[in-house]
Amino acid sequence: MPRSCVVVGAGVLGVCVAARLAEAGAKVTLLEQARPGHAATRSSFAWLNSNDKAPRAYHDLNRAGMRAWAELAHSADGAPSADGAGHQAWYRPSGNLEWADRAEEHAELTARVRRLTGWGYPATLIGAAGAAELEPALRLPPSVTEVAWFPEEGYLLTEPMVAQMAALATGRGTTVLTGSAARVVGIDAPNGAVQAVRMSAGQVIPADAVVCCAGRWTPQVAALAGVACPVPLVPWSSPGAEAPGLVVQAGPVDGLTRMVHAPDVHLRPGSGGLVHLEAPDVAVDLHTPDAKLRDWAAELLRRARHVVRGLDDAEVTGYRVCVRPMPADGQSIVGWLPGADGLYVAVTHSGVTLGAHLARLITAEVTGGAPAAELEPYRPGRFAPTGSRPLA
Ligand SMILES: Cc1cc2nc3c(=O)[nH]c(=O)nc-3n(C[C@H](O)[C@H](O)[C@H](O)COP(=O)(O)OP(=O)(O)OC[C@H]3O[C@@H](n4cnc5c(N)ncnc54)[C@H](O)[C@@H]3O)c2cc1C
Image 1: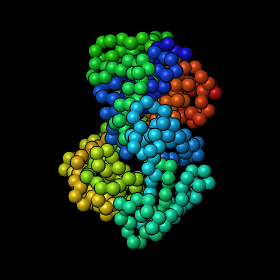
Image 2 (image 1 turned 30 degrees about the vertical axis):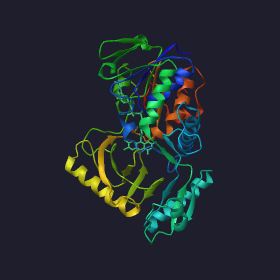
Image 3 (image 1 turned 90 degrees about the vertical axis):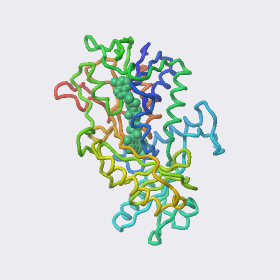
Image 4 (image 1 turned 45 degrees about the vertical axis):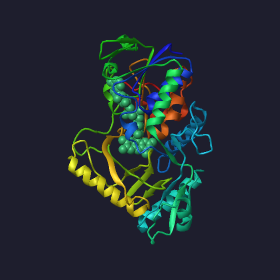
């Protein structure tokens, strides 16, 4: 078991990994260049689901992620929510309602429900009246007669979750350093073995293991160790890049309690009486002019008013383009980086759904446990240049 571990990045992955490593008895330092949770995690739609995840192994990993949050939300310290089930206030297993407005999409939804049911994933088609009973705030178009209901899905309020996980890590002895001085600018790995991490303010932290949870910055941070194996992500900074997405906040909303996936807008309740909105057809990037973002935000609220009551007096309270850390082949990248003993990387889309479960698996591997079979498809070695792939 490594004596000292440095975790780089305090998004959902970093805080969960730090809390688990500390629980396992490691001496942990968590380094965050800004504020915990400020990047993808804060802006995430944070839908806990394995609704349309393929292939089957990835579906199962996400399902395990959903279960892990349910367990963690019961066992983590802190005040239980008022839901009577003893959950943390940031854990919202609200269920999710989805419908389609065109025959082709409805056929896809029906087939998906059938496939998921066959995999043992709770999913069912219910009538419009049943949907209205589950979510009285719904304003279903009269043409919709069938709605898919996914009762075990839900969402997290990521800011209080990150705060609690960081506090849990600290309570277990983790040193948490934040702000620009804590930006990692070097990883010393003489002879191919990690020895220390260098921070921008000049501080050097000895490390037997470095767990890189740096989200979209993971390729650059991993490269600091000077290894040949890349950690390729979908481009995010260039015009037209696919990784950025628009998240809109609006409110006040009265009465919405569940996740709702309507054909042209997705809604989830937020904190403070707000609702988060996303839409599948919004194409924005980090260069999109603010006026266009504002127009999109107004358009999403307009669409939301059509499907949910209680938004008549709502206004857009915020909108933001944020970047999804998306591995180039769409699958998670999790494991020891070939070529640098002691450097572990973890970067993934669906990191909110997967965070609590990945943290357990990563901690077991970093502290010397057997490699987790369920992580085998996601090893960074699949991107190693030909000839440098580790032997199976
Ligand atoms: C719009 C949007 C919608 C999404 N919807 C969902 C969803 O519905 N469900 C779901 O499961 N997932 C969703 N995701 C994906 C999910 O939010 C991410 O996969 C997850 O938040 C990634 O967490 P992370 O900890 O890996 O990265 P981040 O939250 O980005 O954290 C990485 C951290 O590393 C720090 N860092 C980077 N470099 C350094 C350095 N050199 N030194 C120190 N610190 C450093 C950063 O400052 C940052 O805080 C969505 C993402 C977005 C953007």
